[in-house]
Image 1 (cartoon, helix red, strand yellow):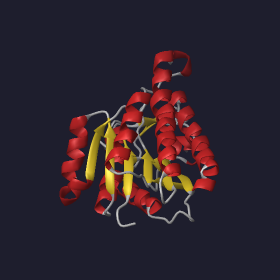
Image 2 (cartoon, one colour; image 1 turned 60 degrees about the vertical axis):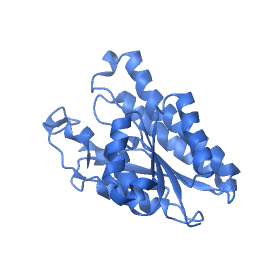
Image 3 (spheres, rainbow, N blue to C red; image 1 turned 120 degrees about the vertical axis):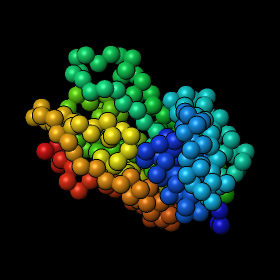
Length: 250
């Protein structure tokens, strides 16, 4: 196949933007999914000469109707899908579990977990039915899929659940040549980590500034996973700032 087709969710900023730009630079056609049309348009502009291969689609991944519309558009425009990077996610301010509002918990679960499921389900259906059959799904798990930060029960719970989603997709997709992996990222320099510039709470309660690394390295890692033949898979990859305190969060 000469043309490869991908979807990146949360493509308007941060990790999603880096992955989308890296895929476009590598020759992929990429559907950019995200809630903000202006941010998606900025990603297209940043792609330069590769911009014409970018297809921005305003999407709320937590909304089943919006996800169905996104993948229906992909079927209509491309007729197939080779790669999904399930990246879109959200969080709430850190705080004690006893103070977390149900509405905030539900919002994080809806975007991080349900949104990833909805997109994976829709991609799975296309990949199963297309000819040649198969494709690859990579989920953004985060370091929080391994160990929590203090006061992060909603985010950490969803990211641990993403690991279960990744493993189940990998198992259930075997007979259809649909493979699934996960990238776990720690402190890539994005707008999210920029909010930690004055320090982030450690396990012992102290506030500490943590090192970051260039988010472009994440994009390159995603492209490496995307370009593997379907008889090979990177099941899990962890990429962090080398001196980030994440082993036992210490």
